[in-house]
Length: 171
Image 1 (cartoon, rainbow, N blue to C red):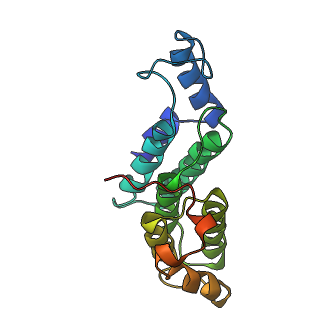
Image 2: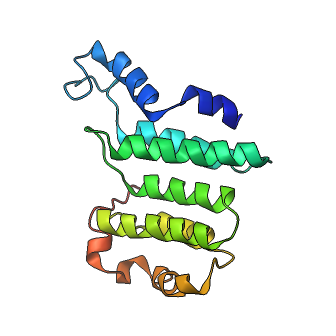
């Protein structure tokens, strides 16, 4: 299944071009005002959510590699999009993919910590990002990540306000 998704979203440029072809009818990516065809962060997050959800299935080494590659390609396309921006769901889904597809190691800790710091910089830390980060660091990936894990165990309301300035709560 992951291979089929990988073929579907084979490369961020191809995926972005396919989305652009669809939206060209409505004036292109940046000028598209049609709410039914405009690319949004939800478009990218849907692909990330799919990869994170498929992570609950049994997989072999090639599926693991395809899942990680697909997740990071979609994330890269979102980051370089001129129209969309990352949000809490983006980091939550990325951390879920990291937690499932990467074995416990220093590399996994480094990638998870990098996602955590990027979420802080974007100001989108919310309870879902905190839970996903803690899951990515269970079991602990090394003693050098202890300080980051301790900070992530705080209540979100007590965290520095700039870490959550752009986080939105939907009810």
